[in-house]
Image (cartoon, rainbow, N blue to C red; front, side, top):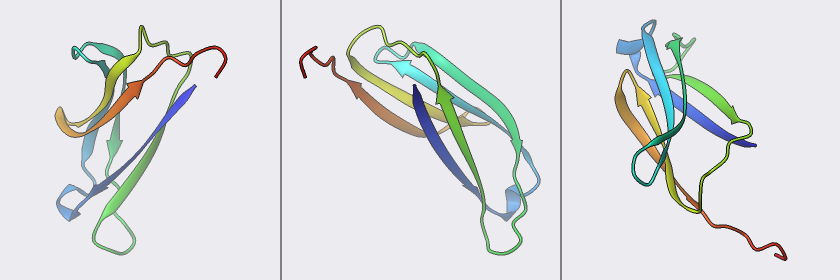
Length: 95
């Protein structure tokens, strides 16, 4: 089991607008291993200048084909906003 937590912030020009969110898990060659997506409406905050939205993506029974480099790519309306690197190392049985 793995969880990825994402927090987005948006300014007044985006309040009330629909956004398409994608979280892709990619291998070192850019191939997709998992993809989670959905639509959200940017909330209008009670006060302050920025709206925030938080998501927790729970990835269950996810299997990685081998040790190595991976990344999570976060896209909003098709535009990559963040890339989160992940490096996996196979642990020995005794350790």
